[in-house]
Image (cartoon, rainbow, N blue to C red; front, top):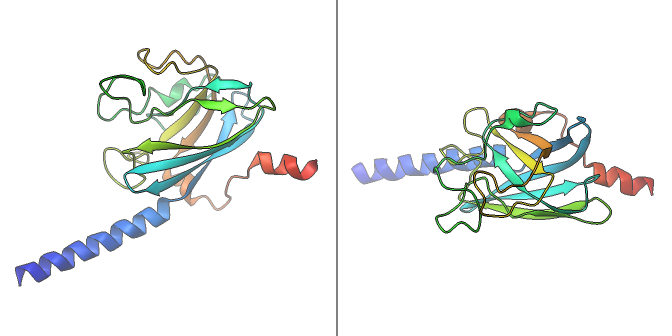
Length: 192
């Protein structure tokens, strides 16, 4: 009898977790520059043992740019310092090339093409959009920040990636907004 109760409880838990993931994934976030102009979107999708991040941006300087998840769901200008430090619930050192691991919010550099655009998918291994310490939506949420320069992958505490030039809030409020963010790169293609 105890086994049946245990199996029943596990089945209910799995259904509830599945429903929660569906409500939170995909999660589209609008990205803004320091002038508060919308310059793109980031779409977060729950996957097994990771979250994928589809980033579409325009009007950025060509070249390599550091991109990270930051600890607070705040993008106050002009410098986006309100986003706090990198999302690091495990207390690791910074950098994907660091031998002792990296921040959970560390991602590969974002390459902006010569026309100022990028459309890439990156991964956050170990992150989730459901509940827990590694959730991008824990407490009030987190933020995604694109820096002005390249992350060197090892420098502490943030990879020497330069100023914060783009920011977007990752929160349940964003997930439940009636008006989904538009993709500014799509509207420009229509005008051409």
